[in-house]
Image 1 (tube, rainbow over the protein chains, first blue to last red):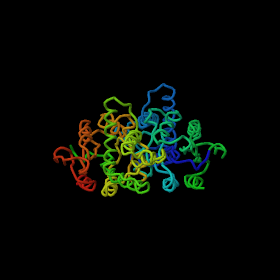
Image 2 (image 1 turned 90 degrees about the vertical axis):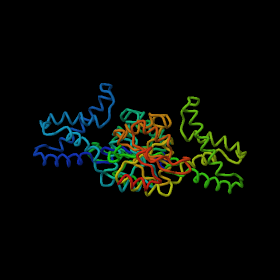
Image 3 (image 1 turned 180 degrees about the horizontal axis):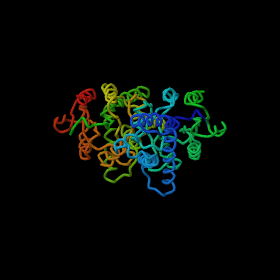
Image 4 (image 1 turned 120 degrees about the vertical axis):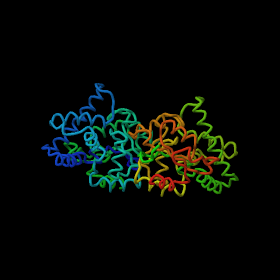
Length: 233
Length: 233
């Protein structure tokens, strides 16, 4: 496809824009120090994310009714706190607050400079499974310069459901080839491609085991600054 | 209600944030000079807006299927160009472009300084009948600092339908009294009040015939800077 046709970029958020793992480890360690807990917070963060992914799977299979990522994260957190036998160390308010660490995820170092550059030429939107309030709070907390916030919540589905991508294309009032999906996950880009969108893979080494071949997507690169360079070229 | 409970402000856009009338007059005059047309562009702008309002009425009455504001504006424009007997002076592309003047409306002088101030403390969202792409393009064109773009398009309805206000409250993940509707039109604020939202009336003298009594809404003031002062007080 022709990169010159791109008018808007839609971004996956968890893992692509923000470093969920280290943001959670950091807050976990703070809580652990305050409460005197001995927890491997890296393992905890990974299990929390895996719990979410597995619950999304249940929604996709029809085993579970659609609900927000906030609710899925909370279910996953409840289970983990029991597994680590630290559930009684947290009040309900403290659990609510810890669950909202997903609203306070910090961007990868290249994200804000890259987005700021890209925003001069393109409409920048989120296209995340995260619910709208989560994405709005995160954008304010981490100063992410979005033009608009799109979420799979708007169609009560989860990526890679085609409705999610079609919703964004439609609400932007654009043709599919005028919208480029930017993500660190191949399943997301493969789905966007099936909808006729352009695709940019960002290599975040903790998110995918392998860097895909450069022929697989319209752009394959290492960060948002490289993305901006390739799009301006 | 208690102003200290407010966490997010939702804004009507046409007339409240942007001065649609003078933006249209300005572009109309430019086109008029280029094409040598003798048109009263103030009357034209008012008739265009009235045409839109009347078409929204048809949608609300069930006489017309829901469609975007872009489409309603275009229907209204087509009718007007024939009425002024200047339809054959415009190519289809020129009509499309003129119709998109609604994507290029300029803010009232207090809007950007006021929003910039308010944004430090509150989530700022549009809550407009304007379709998402119109609002996104306008925000980029006029540098309006929104945290998120909500539109009646998301529920395929028009204000003052209760679903429009409920959608915004719900997507923000807030209680109704934590969200304040800001508008220059009483019908809009009255509807927001019925949903339990807080309300701020902004007096734009060309939008309402009378300034309502200050007891009618939580805030009644003259511009966004006064709004920011009253909310910080």
